[in-house]
Length: 359
Ligand SMILES: *Cc1c(COP(=O)(O)O)cnc(C)c1O
Image (cartoon, rainbow, N blue to C red; front, side, top):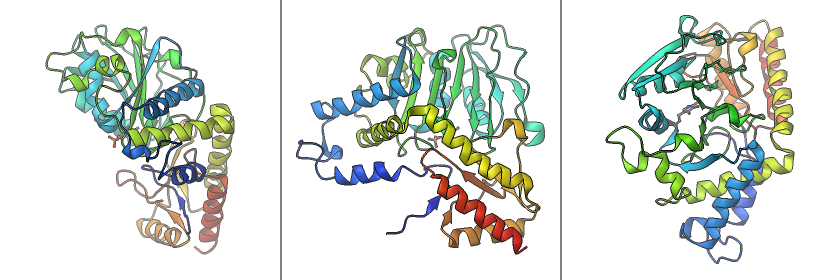
C-alpha cells in the first residue's frame, strides 16, 4: 500500500485513522453481525450511529438548542434550490457573490424569485472579498446569502456581512469544522461533507427552529422541505447511512484531537507554511489578496501555462496528487483540509523549492 498526499478539493483526503476504523468494522459493526451498509436505517444500531453523530457535531460546533441538525442528500447544489424554496416568502433574497459557488447559488435562486447581487468581486476574478460592513440590503429580502469559503477561488469571508437584521445563510462546505464558529450568527449554516468531513453523499444543514415551517413556496416537494427532515430527525426516508457513519467517525477523530480550536491551530500552521513560501517565491504566486486568503484552498500560479503543466506533472509523479487548479483560475490549487497532515504541506513546499531551484 502506498498512500499519496492528496490535495484534491473534493472529494478529498480523510483521516487515515478513520479509514482504518472503518476497515476494521467493515464486516461487522459492533456485535450487530453485519456491516453498517447492510443495516436497516430503523435499527437500534443505526439510530445510535446517527444520534451520536449529531451529538458529537453539536459538541464540536457548540450548536445552540434552538437549532436542528439535518443530514440530507442531493449535495451542495440541491441546497441552492432548497434554501429559496423554504425561505423566499417575499420572492426576494440578497446574494453576496465572491466566487463560483455563490454565483451558482444566486443563479439557482432566480428560478424562485429575485436574487439581488448586493456585493461581488467578479471585477477581479473573485480574488478578494469586498467590504461587507455597510451593504444595500434589500428591504423585502428574506435572507442574505454567502459562500464563506470559496473552494475554487480560495477566499474566505473573515468578517461576516452586516445583514441589517436579515437572516444570514452560509455555505461552509469547504471550511466545515476547520475552525470554531458561532452558529448563533447564522439562520442556516450548511455544507456538503465531501470537502472536509466525509464521503460524498451527505449534506449537513444546521437551521434555526423558526426557519422550519410549512410556509414554503408552492410546489415545494415533500423531500425539499426542511420541516419534513426536521420532524423525522433525518429519517423521513432512507438516509445515506454509511456516509453518516463515516462522518461520525470523523467527528470522534476531531474530538480526540481537541476539537475545532486545536484543529484551527494546525490548519493555520499548515496554511502559513505554504503562504510564507509563496510570498517569498520568485516563480510561484498566490492569486488571492492576502487578507482574504483561505486556510483550506490555496490557488497559485507561475504565470506560464507550460510551467504550470510541468509542475503539475512532476508533482503527480512525486506523490503530490490533485494539485491542478480549477479551469476558471488555472495554475495549481492545494487543498489543505483537516485530514491533510502537516507533513504533506512540508513535502509540497520542499518540492516547490526544488522545482524553483531547477527553473
Ligand atoms: C463542492 C461545493 C459545492 C457543491 O457541492 P456538490 O455536492 O457537488 O453539489 C457547493 N459549495 C461549495 C462551497 C463547494 O465547495
